[in-house]
Every structure is written in structure tokens, then in C-alpha cells.
Length: 120
Image 1 (cartoon, one colour):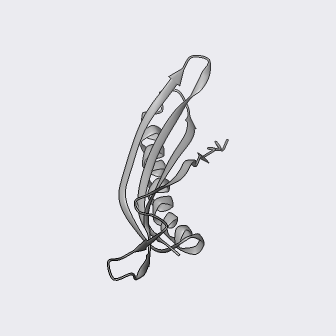
Image 2: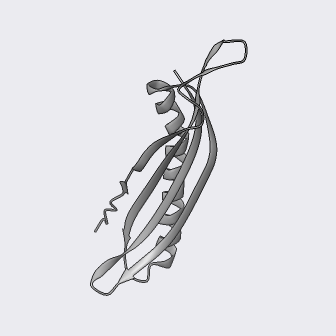
């Protein structure tokens, strides 16, 4: 019997923090586009069977790879929608296993990324 694994990506809190105003004026009165920081969080929940240690490691690795791929893709999306340049500044990924007597076990992979972008 095949076992289906459901994977959910939750984009929680896409936010942009202005480092400088949307348009900055330099000393010689030239107007330049502003740099802003964009922070994005992800969470992936993958159910596992009880006492499935090898499966846990495999799912954790798979979850981390999904976060890494999404972090890479995020700059493409930002460039398409609101930025003229994009640079990944930080990426944090963590994982844990949760067991509950009443529910199946879950591998939880969380990640957060911070990008520096120049607005269009």
C-alpha cells in the first residue's frame, strides 16, 4: 500500500521594512530607488508513521530542500513583482519531530529568509 505524504507550505508574514524612504535623494539632488528588507517565513508539516526514524531523516532532508528551493525562487518572484534587484541576506532553517498519542507524528521544518531589494 502506498503512503501519501502531504506537504504544506505556509507563507506566514511577508513583510517589507523600509530602510530608507521609497525614493531617496542624494546630496547632488539625484533621486535613487530605495533599498528595503523583505522577510518571509515558511513552515512545512509532513506526517510520519510512529517510530519511523529513517523516514524522519529522509523527510527532514526533503523539507529542508523545499525551503532552499523556495528561498531561491523568492528572489525571482520579487524581481517579477516589485524589485529591480534582489539579494538573499539571511536564511535560517530548522526542523523538529512532534509526536502525540492521539495524532500521527509530524516532521516540522521551519524557515525564514531575509532579502534586500531595490524597489522598481
